[in-house]
Amino acid sequence: MNQKELKELIEFLIEKDIAEFELERGDVKVKIKRAAEPSPAALPDSRYIAVHPAPTTVPAPVPGRVDLAANAGAPEPEEVLHIVRSPIVGTFYESPSPGSPPFVKVGDSLEVGQVLCIVEAMKLMNEIECDVAGELVKKLVANGQPIEYGQELFAVRPAK
Image 1: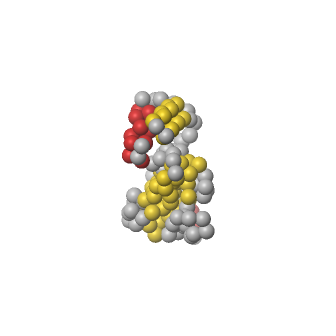
Image 2: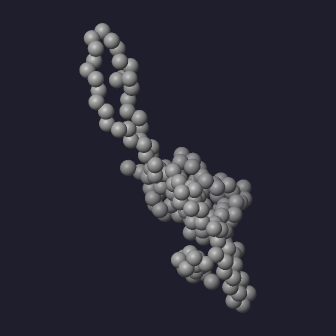
Image 3: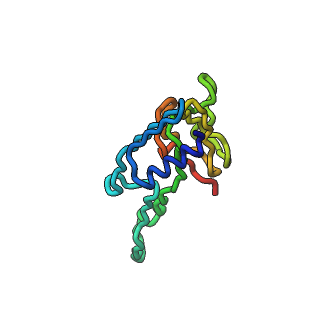
């Protein structure tokens, strides 16, 4: 079973809302167990929340009085980050081999197609590539950590 077939199987299980699945074909065993999805009300998606102040009227200045509030700049809108998610279940590795430097680190400039990490699944090393150009803002998983399908791996500030 290759990575594409495994991805299609996982997508099918999600579509049909199947929580647990086991397949044994020759010497290959696949067992997929999905955790219950949290309700949208329980976990708000904070990546897309932006606070915009309501428009207000500014009173005319009073002669001889300094208005410090008028000198303050408008609050910066919250930036929207692109999230790179895992396409498969496996183990996250930040470098090509133990002792090697990581593929990327926070602050690096990223290009589309650049390798970000490796996810090991069924003894296969799958390179995960960046799908947007920009700057790496945050790594969301630890080296050697087991990860789930769709789990957030990296936050990237898209290039303008």
